[in-house]
Length: 501
Image (tube, rainbow, N blue to C red; front, side, top):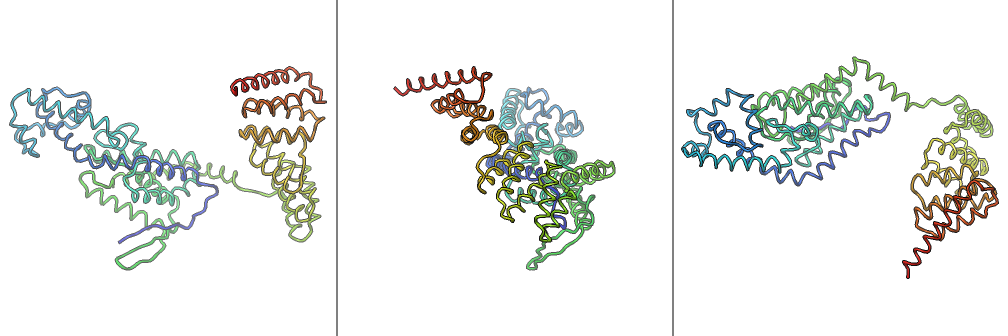
């Protein structure tokens, strides 16, 4: 029997789920970057387990032997945490586990035993220091601090990755939409660490690396159950040759999955290929976390703040203008919008609607005027890309020259975006269009500076500085700067001439 969730009834959010997208992207990038290494080292796991087993047995049966530093740091905590097991391992009456132990029990020469320990310690050190999985996957017997985070972004294969990412998408984006990006991110990362620790509690001696996002994703599923118990999930099923779809509430499906994981976890006495207790722990953590967020009122506060940001309540004047336009009264709509813009010049919705109405009426001048105001508003809000689009719209509809101050702000915005070629071109146009305005002088100086410092064009820079020096705009306060610029441009020209020779 094969079951796969396809979608649920609430597949739309109030804004883009950027954190969920980012988590999926990080997982995919991490998989592409580590899959080859993990695949190669995964084949060495039986060898690593054998080395560790021999190390522990030899240390328990011959405590007088000297052990390497890495091996000692691993063995000593085990002897303290599990004293009864340690005594059992040291008992000479215990049946040997394998041929190696049977052989080593026959050895009585201390030098030979020490040589055996030295070889095992060296192998253990090499495995610990050179194995990617030992460092970044979660190994319950000796977890590293970083592995509580990194194990959640590592996967052993494409199916493992795709399955986790699909469930992350289905459960994650709707929780992000309700909890907000900060809480959702903290919850996800914390859930992954908690799931790993719970897996470690149930398999404390396991040397099998645990990796994958399933613990954190299970937490999202638990939270989904608490928050949206009645939300119906569409499932695809395949039983032998019978295939189909059905819908059922989360309250029916997710607890069933949780109970199955609990059953499999109880049946497995040692860590297996599937970390069932990580799933159970993550699922429980998700349910508890969702209850706390809901009961504390924090979720409601965050959701209200998001709603306030994304909701749009139109001004009555815009509503009236829209209704007038729909009723075939464009002149009335334009009048209302112009009055509204005069009172509230920072209304982008009114300006966009005014743009559209003027265009429909064939009023190019009116359309250009609204576009200029929209450009000014976007510059004020430091949205340089939107302002540049407005300027291009202005040009495409026959506009020639922006107001000098607006044009200068646009040029500076281009400069801030490091679009130096376009900035110099626009500075030049501005200076040509408004030769007697102060903005013209500032444009010439800025064009000279960019040409010299950013574009490496001293000849062009010298032309701009000379034009600034000859400008009819009074510039006594800027004369020293202009002269310095001219000298630097001349020096750069001379230097380039020397290099050319």
